[in-house]
Amino acid sequence: MKATLSVVILTRQANSALGRHLNVLGLADEVVIISDQKPKSGTLPKKVKIYHHPLSNNFSSQRNFALKLVTCDWVLFLDDDEKPSTNLLKEIPKALNENIEGFRIKRLDIFYSQILRHGETGKTKLIRLAQKRAGIWRRPVHEYWKISGKVADLSFPLYHLRNNLTFGFISRMGHYSTLDAPVLNKEGKPFSFFRLFFLPAAKFIRNYFFYLGFLDGLLGLFHAYLMAIQSLTVRVVQWEKSL
Image (cartoon, rainbow, N blue to C red; front, top):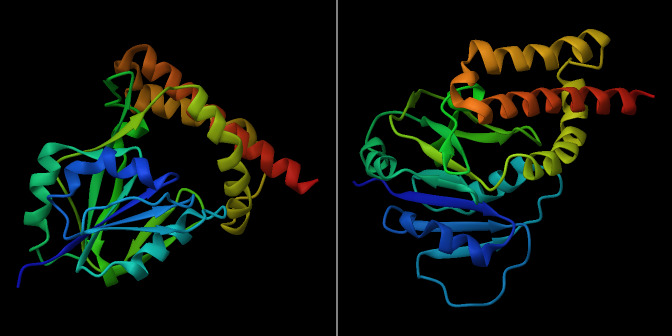
């Protein structure tokens, strides 16, 4: 029997999300859009369903909500600003027939039409395709799909389309750090001066030198710097919450 596939798209505004993901309609048996904001009424393709589920400072809750709704054997998760490459769309149907519970997909960030091929973003692989009953999503922020069973890698990438480098990054930094700080405490990584001074510097060195971020030119330099600032910000938030 042919395996079936649900594509889940997480977005803030459902009505604009489908237009950016028309390329998945031919791949999916059903498309489930989970919207942070209530969608406007309108005509949808038969296989598309839209549900409203507020984010509520927990990214995993939206994804687990979607897992309860989908009806197919396999699920592919996409964020609103992600787009599967053409080769990935061709690879996925073949992967569904393999005796594997989940697949990691390489995700490449694109800024100003340039792909970041180095740094930690150039090494990012996320489990985004898995059997529906293979696991659940964990962690409120920087969430991950915890899969029980065998996980393999797909060959072709998913593109993360970023509108700008600084404004979008900085606007998310405070919000994400506020969510991440208490989680780090629960994970046994509380505030310390060692983490405050060492980890941001180590993140820059790792991204720019060890992960060859310098090969991405100025974009690689700026991105390594911002990732270090993000690491610093979450330590500062931890310190604030400990006062």
